[in-house]
Length: 87
Image (cartoon, rainbow, N blue to C red):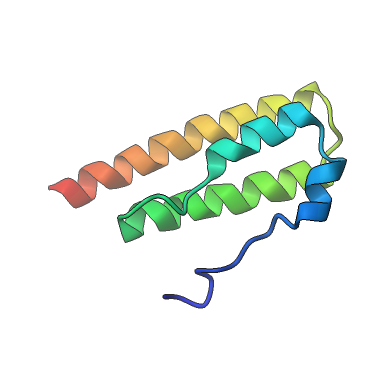
């Protein structure tokens, strides 16, 4: 287990402040369920960035758009890594 394996940048106190729609999107940035190390590492970077954005940006439509675009990018990144490690 790496030193960051148990790192969680989303303390429960922050969940209370966030708009419920933002919390719903953030759930899709989970990475702990991924078995393959490379997929988990790529996904973790997007997870951390999404949470940083949610904490620092206002609860508005631009933040939601950014999170949705980031989620699409994360999905593409994980699929790309999945292809390279499956070969």
